Image (tube, rainbow, N blue to C red):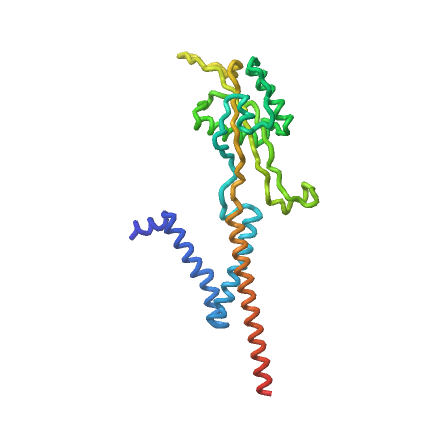
Length: 274
């Protein structure tokens, strides 16, 4: 018996099922019992269900506004299929990252080529993120995962030198003012490119601390092309709010319609008895 109780207490599925059953019996069941004994079983059930739908609509709206409660997928960076890791600067145009060719002759040093790439990104409207910005660290962490998955680098073999981003603007906006973006539910695609430079291979010697890593200026920089998936954090709450609101309005209309029938019947009864 004790083992069975412990299993119920620690098993998430059984505990969740018991919570729902107890909520139905104690919360909604008790209210329905009180209303049913005062206004009748069917009318009490209708009033209880209307109150539950209204409460769920209010709860869902709060979840929707603050992004809490039942949540969907969080925003994250995802790979651009077939164009995630770009190992040569000239391939940026071929991958569709840049609109114009770089015009490199092939005789430039890797450092000079990286400078040309940086200038081209800024000319085409890409924003350069500072290392202190939160988006810089998030994009760098996602890029490191993709580099390791593609076996381009291992952990600790590269340095993130620059992060470029473009897009992500919300629309439509009231009168084109950024401060009035209450209805800006749509977003343009949000792209990010992370530039990484390889480190010089370290030589480890027994008994000596490894030397500080240095960027290998003789090797070309590489680029990680990603697109931002905005996720669906508020989608479950939105569905609960919209669905509960529709049910609440339909039940409220049924109650209003019943009140009209009752009033008409009472008025007709009064005329007949007069």
